[in-house]
Image (cartoon, rainbow, N blue to C red):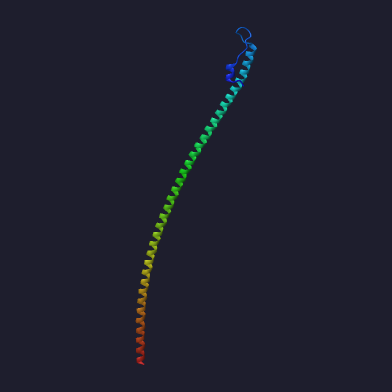
Length: 150
């Protein structure tokens, strides 16, 4: 391949007074043209390759951006789900505590009612016992009278 320095230093032999050999000049120009075409194609191929690589880089940059956005959305959604779950858990706990308090209150009321029933039954038993004692005493008195009459 001809270098820029070779082109600059190229000397043509003079055939006539102040003239150059046309064949030598044509040959040099042909070599120069071939090398220039080769370089031109290499530059054009290099530009296409650079353009393709830039396009791929842009594509991958967009993918990276999309992935980052998706990751942020996923993190945000995760936080929202976590927050919603915590709120729901807190609500369930609150409802359970209220139900437990209500159940405890109902049981306390039922216990109080049963105690009153027990007191009433004990009072009725005491009254019944007193009546029975009175009846037995009066029956005993009758028996004593009947025995004393005999």
